[in-house]
Length: 115
Image (cartoon, rainbow, N blue to C red; front, side, top):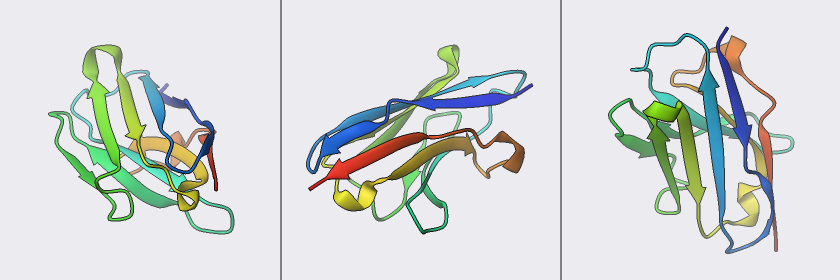
């Protein structure tokens, strides 16, 4: 059974940094692209970043230049380094495959950025 578990969220002041982790377990092809997503209060879930099996990345315009995604295939773990956080980055952050598989949404990890 495939499972993706996010961690690393927290409360941080604007301009601060956080590093999120996503551990992928279960029997999955190692060549899958992975993605980060987020959902702010009252808004739909949105895509944030993608990282392919070879490490190629792409980002939403709202986070480009501030967020960096990486992955450690040996540890089945993906990371999201978030720098210069803004109040608008406040959301629950999720990881999933890219494109997302509805059955694999987890609980997410809360990121709260205070002004």
